[in-house]
Length: 446
Image (cartoon, rainbow, N blue to C red; front, side):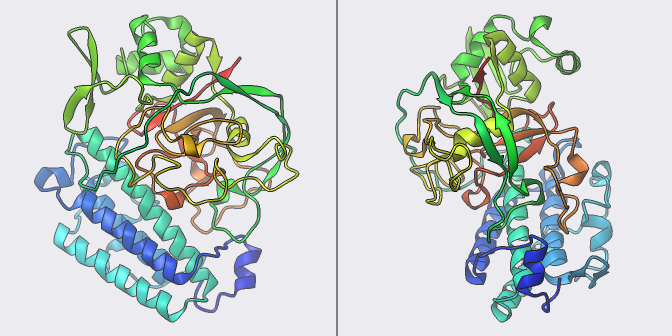
């Protein structure tokens, strides 16, 4: 989609954004600043790290960001035509669709100084193009795609540092609001609901398109996510060793992983601690439990006589009021309304830098009274990641379609998620065995 791409042509494909070019330029710069802060203190073997199925070599991942931004914002002409890269070997090294994950440690990767030049050269060219072509609808769409892509990788860099036990990211840490009591369930109306994004002039991913009717029974959903103290009761009750609480796939995972507790929990002197980046600290009882995979969340629910919400239930509790639960009025963009996220509403990137108590951020409650439906920890839902009716993939075809059917849906974001990424219709997705990511869960009454 080159410079001649018209607004009408973009809208006809659902490739739309109302974000001005100047705002997109600022977002690109902010994402790049975060990338460099997360990656550039790594040296030597840290730039490759252990070979794991869940993370990339940092040196590869940094360069992949430059490749992606260059491909979509400078090289992509249409589905059948693409201009050459500034780096002749870039496609064979950094195209995630063509380069198998397991091979990325063995490739002739660019050294860090060359990678940084590649990053800078591409960003400089994209910013200049935005300045020249501020009304190019296709360019603005792909620029927002590239910004979102880099922001998602910044979150991945953060959990990669946790996985490898590297030091915490260097950034300004602000004080999060005080926590208040947030217990029990709220009753949500159910009924006819329009699940998914509305076709308005806003950037959304293909898996959010488009809203479609579903029918929900009235349900009761927890006001807050499960906290460490609540999950510790399950662990201390021998929950990991008791087969009756685990689905068959969960039992197989638990046995293969030899799991006895959440992945970073450590018992010392009868008390629970956990590893946070390269430090072992006491486990905060009221903080949301994190690094929990879907099987662990499901087992806790079985033990507690609860269940995970469907993603439609989660979205209705986050996006509606009693008046518009049936979809008769516009849904809220965020649980608290339409005001962009800030440090009073949600624990997202730039607020606390760690997991907060589940009772914090009262200002961000949904209309139904659910707290932290955006921010703090991603929340597993009951559903497999599948396409919405009438799904049509966007040009970045590897984003959603390859993962339908074998990933579970998560909603809501976490403390490492960039605020600009999120909205109530956002769908994240991971395989149910992943517990390296910043995921927890909230529950529904059975």
